[in-house]
Picture 1 (cartoon, rainbow, N blue to C red):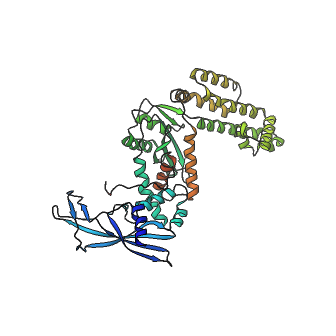
Picture 2: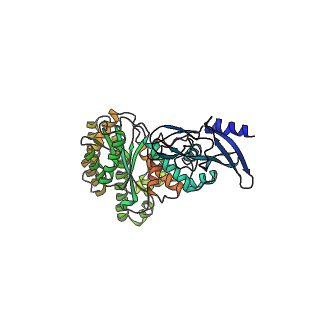
Picture 3: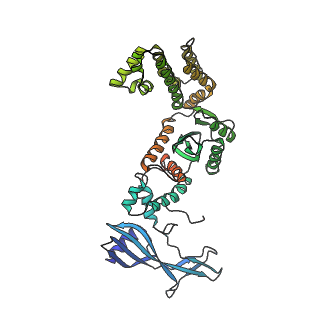
Length: 434
């Protein structure tokens, strides 16, 4: 029995041949756990202070027993009971505990158990994984808090040319505490940093932290931002000649806001007969024509027939997004001038306000065209995909009380290299204080 267990546990999983041997196995069928006692074969160790090697005599009884959670053996919770020897170095007069190589720095479980728990938390809620592994939720969160920062900093990220910055509300309300800002490498689809709020000072602090890890300043060329001014000020402070790109999703959001304001104003002017047609069709009006089907498309046609102003504004909305298909900034400008001419002498305040906004921030559209030419293959959808990841995390966890933990999870699940589910990869934490 011992021989079989020894080959499974030591040669197969713990991989410490010649260091430990099984001396006792205790099964408890009522409590469904197994306790395996390991004795040390190799009793030598290196002093952490003077780096000299020392051996422990077999007569040395100066030890305590440490119980460590390991991977389950069949349906039993498995604990390894190991002797922890206290060693005295006569050269430097330093006393230390002889190391257990497969134990995490927290000391409560093996690297194998901690790695499996960390990987499973990528695909399911912590509460469900805690039930499956029969541990507390707090222990799993502690494991994640140890692994995520270490693995995130170990990523090899080179020549970052395109950054994307966006904010996301993680709690209800419009205060600064309700938001986090997310900075990601759009080309390699990696989240580099998540910070509190969306002020210039907070974004600057996050950028300096990223720079200290990966030195991105020299290679950075483009930054995708929305029209929130503090973001741009923070980047100009970080690097003066960086080029700002206003991505199509934010421009379309502004255009949809203008179109919805037109709908509201036209509703007030409309007759009672047309009130029924215009009211309640906001999302039909703001949707793309290609995505509408059946009754939704019929309702939109009915609304546009009933109101000529909405008909014009809807056609302009559908037409405007072609501007991002141009390869030449000059031809894009010519298209915009023609598009703007359709609104001439028409007193549609929301649309005229949108035109002024685009004219003021035209450089962002020019840079978007330049980005497409200089770095082909950039996927703008990845930027908005991070927002979807955050929403999924909040929904799966029913909110997060610990904001720092949430920021770690955003880095993990928003990064292409970190979110891959690898259940049999063994991660090792660095030594305490290293």
